[in-house]
Length: 122
Image 1 (cartoon, rainbow, N blue to C red):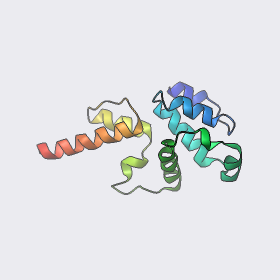
Image 2: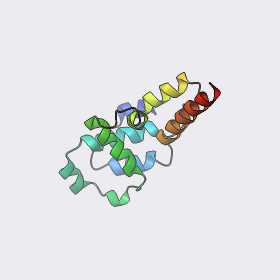
Image 3: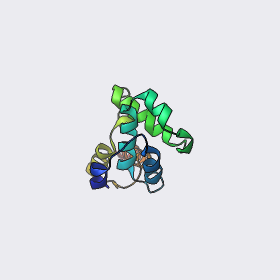
Image 4: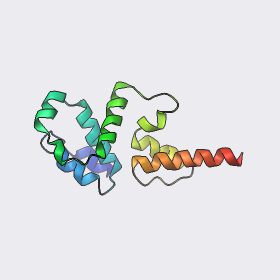
């Protein structure tokens, strides 16, 4: 997946096709790459060229995270996990001995569960 993300050429013409391919296959890095592309694109041009009708509504959250990360929002303690990149979440999960597979939401949930479990054991 990481090799594909490095080589795929995203455009406003193909973004919906690629993100809707990545979503059901749980390709978190590819989804994140698409959302980063959209968050950095010209907003007016994106609004005119991209048919968001074909994009699953659940991806709006991923897009908002990309915007927040780009603008430096959510970097407080509570929002830190929410704005971390998938690669950062996977590294953190690995360091805690957790599974590194899954979506952004699954990684965040596993890390939070691991932290809560660690607090109750201490």
